[in-house]
Image 1 (cartoon, each protein chain N blue to C red):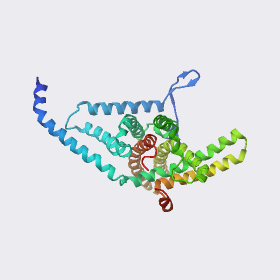
Image 2 (cartoon, chains in turn yellow, brown; image 1 turned 30 degrees about the horizontal axis):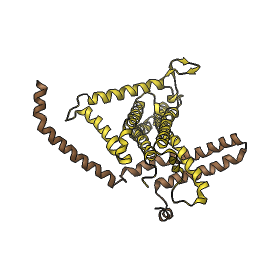
Image 3 (spheres, rainbow over the protein chains, first blue to last red; image 1 turned 120 degrees about the vertical axis):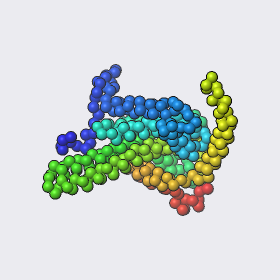
Image 4 (cartoon, rainbow over the protein chains, first blue to last red; image 1 turned 90 degrees about the horizontal axis):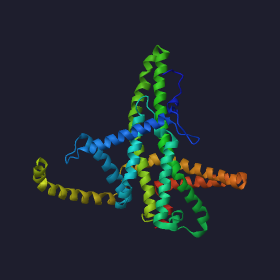
Amino acid sequence: MAAGHSPMEQFTIKTLVPIEFAGYDISFTNSSLWMLLAVICSAAFLTLGVKRDGVVPGRLQSIVEIFYDFIMRQTVIPVMGESGRRFFPLLFTFFIFIFFTNFLGLLPYSFTVTSHIAVTFAMALLVFALVLVIGFWTHGLRFLSLFVPSGVPAWIMPVIVPIEVISFLSRPISLSLRLAANMLAGHTMLKVFAGFVVSLLGAGGVFSALAIAPLLAGVALTALEVLVAAVQAWVFTMLTCIYLNEAVHLHDHH
Amino acid sequence: MATNTTDQREDPDQDRLDELGRKIEAARGTSPEQGPQRPAAGRNLAYRLPTEFVAAVFVGAALGWGFDRLTGLKPFGIIVFSILGIVAAFHLVFRLVGKPPVDKDEGN
């Protein structure tokens, strides 16, 4: 790559197959391509993993079982209780999709789908809509009592209720922002440090010897990014869990 | 034929496996309820807090901007809603970190 390239260039959307439908641009882009690859990879991973269905799991099956266990027994059940089981398919889909898009994004020359807020916000809006639907479905208008904390004097309500509404509305924003910002920041940082290596080597003399420092930092950052990729996938799933739990159980946990 | 014989041979093992599965299930079912604060909780909070804060401030400002557009009360909506947004942000952060001691006495 040329030295003049911006570290943000990796996030540009490139149209691969231009498609237009009813005046909308629905082209197949590099983002669509990597989403599709993530879906194919996760489907292959899960179907191959459970294909043999052994009592004593093989290597791949063990990994699939760890994924299942991690989401079901260590996230969904502790947060939502047994009633969370019915949301497991959705939550696991979120987890595995984000996990694979994050990890595929770590490959050189690939594209990180989750670095775009359009993608993460679409997922967060789905969660938000689901929380509203489930909340009003199970509790009716009583769901609105979510904005009225118990044990607060009446005269303070005009202030508390808007604050609660704002913090409720901020959920899809923070949910999507967290994932996108983490991926964006991580990948930009990797590119910047990689750029340092190139420019130090190009500077020659003593500077070339110094190039080892950003290279080591880059290696360490890559390791960190692997952790972040997995953690952010889990954080998204866990928060979805918490929001859904609140919609199902309202104030029960207080 | 071959599968039949293996199935029959595995039958007693299957019972013991089911029994073991039930025991594991019982052990697992009780432990998470007893200790909701797991060691990962702190790190989890560290990942959550900054964006929660920013998002609440942003939503407050955006609501104020929209309010101004709708009502024509140009500067006041964004001022009031931004303040509410900032208060909501602190409220969120305090709720996540744990209620301040004063709140604890009044609540419950």
